Length: 84
Image (cartoon, rainbow, N blue to C red):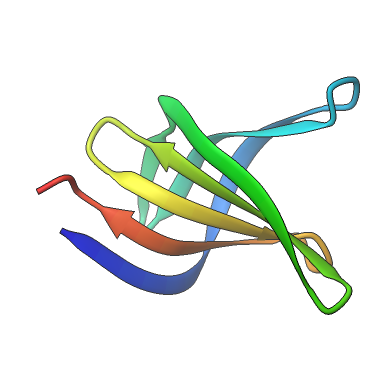
């Protein structure tokens, strides 16, 4: 079941300056930590002057959509799907 939400989350990620890639490694939501085991699609969009990075990622028990606001450097969780 897919759930649309819009809440800030803590994300641990790797930043590679040579390839200019961001790779989310884990996220913390509702006092639980989810290890990201698979990175899906990644795209960017602009809203005014602000650049946003959108990642679809998979943990062992759920799928998530994460959005990084590059102005504030705040990660937001916008969608959760437990696969049911």
